[in-house]
Amino acid sequence: MVSADQYSGNGPKSLSIVIPLYNEGDHVESSLSEIGRYAHTRTVADMGVQDVEFVLVDDGSSDNTWEAIGRFASVHAKCVCLRLSRNFGKEAAICAGIEHAHGAAVIVMDGDLQHPPELIPEMVRLWTVEGFDVVDAVKADRGEEPAWYRFHARLFNQVMSRLSGFDLADASDFKLLDRRVVTAFLRLSERQTFYRGLVAWLGFRHARLPMIVKPRMAGRSTWSLLRLLGLAVTGLTSFSTAAMHLVSLMGMMFLIAAIVLTVKTLWTWLRGEAVPGIATVIILQLGIGSVTMIALGIIGEYLSRVYGETKARPRYVVADSLDHRSHP
Image 1 (cartoon, rainbow, N blue to C red):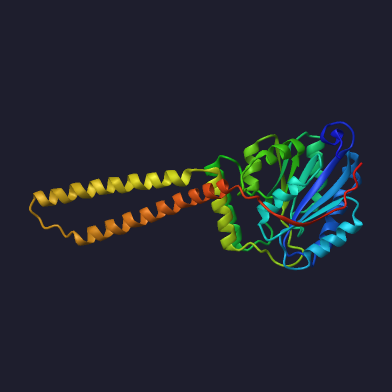
Image 2: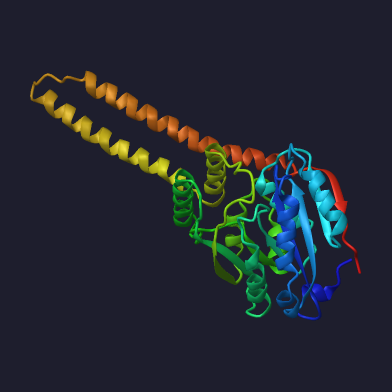
């Protein structure tokens, strides 16, 4: 049972560190030890954080990740481990971790040390001393990301910022959330989530903390272009109806073009001039057909989101769990 003081300004505070993991068994124990080293510093303790727990979520890994985090948990006083029944995706794994976190604040970060753990004390300071509800680690330097990934990530963030009205430029999943924000986040009922967008949508007091993305501890990213595109579609359809308005705009443009061509055709007919016709008809058919297919595709994306939400399936399924937290 977590005491009320841990969720208030009275007495010692607790901190949960949520880490989604997927096929990271080769390095996860050393990575977690490094993260723990910064989370248990004297600086953090002096700011009132006396209790730090890890919430580790194995998102259906096919390697020895589950065994590795089990070994880490067996020697760590405060640790809860979840193994999802299959790979539900990082967004679902983050939700699982947040839902099982007990801390007065929750830090969400990756387990490959690309999110620098040395920022944890400053995050805690901004939360405890400055009073911010959300601390966003933003990418001042994207590190050694491939050029294609860097381009698509920045394009996506710019488009999302413009369409949603929230500043997601250089945003990352590395965030500290106060318990009030966590409580509000857990009230959101979406099955298909976009964590960064939801935290921005919730509001509260945000602080931006620049970070330099470090090289991965080991292995390589599992984010393919196709998976990134899927996340982009989820984000865009979840936070904006601009794509639907774009269909209406294209329809108006083709209507204007059709009126102009109709007037031109009638004018040449009244003058008794031969109308070529064939090229015009082909262009119109291709144009209208393309716009129709694009419109149907966009409408289909929104309908698929509605279909997924109405089924009300759980975001994830937990196959196994280990709880090494010692409760007061």
